[in-house]
Image (cartoon, rainbow, N blue to C red; front, side, top):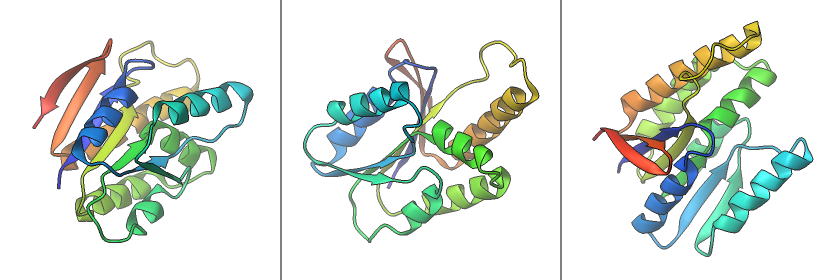
Length: 169
């Protein structure tokens, strides 16, 4: 079963692309959500994503323990869409999690899954150098996470302006 990583910038169309691929793969899918609504703007973004998903989707909230959620899935072939790794990383860093260890655990969990998996992640290294040490640490951690997940993925795409560019597979 294929692991597909969809990378892109903010509002690039990466979530729409991943959702489209997942929907084309099976009539029933699992959406693993990593976002938390800490403010009204984020609540609106989450509501927008929920409205975009039609029938055939179940949702599993996993803002922090993504690996536990993936490892806890019952056997089956239902495709999984994880949206997104960037928010999961942010949550990990905010809670003082061991990013390196969790990245290794995530990659192991992905390789063990016997179902199609679609992962969404932001490419944050193409812009300006962040002004703060925390911003730079996050950018670096995101780059390392994307590299690790891309390595275990069968397919990697970069989305810009809603257009996918195949990088791997």
